[in-house]
Length: 153
Image 1 (spheres, helix red, strand yellow):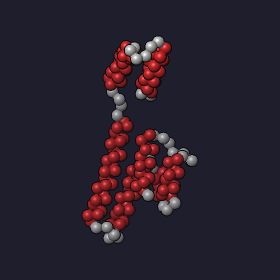
Image 2: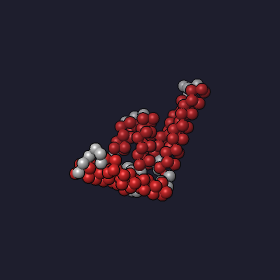
Image 3: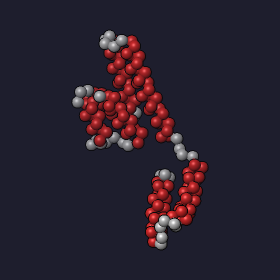
Image 4: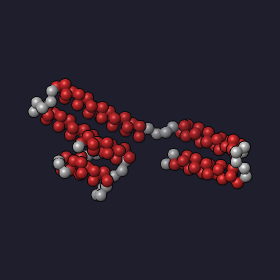
């Protein structure tokens, strides 16, 4: 249950949306974990980084299974290795989200797009005539400039 909840919580955490009553992610936590372990669900929701809280609970469960001799040392090490990879995934995705897009990259992309939109009518002139050419170039230009503007948000 915790493993299935981890991916939802990581998505929610990286998008930076706030948890509120009736939130889909909160419902998923209660559906996946809360029915069986309500104290885990409440604990995870109270944490600043819920995906890390899930990994902590997984490590606690792994330790308990190991102490109860329900897992061999090799099995416990393999599971701990997988949990460490999940922790690495959290760190990597946080780093990607926090990295700004370099201004030079966006400036270069904007210039390239303007050049493309200037050459587009010349490339389409042999295949489209009159109003069809202007309509096609207008729609493509509107879509591309709109996407470029969205990238600055």
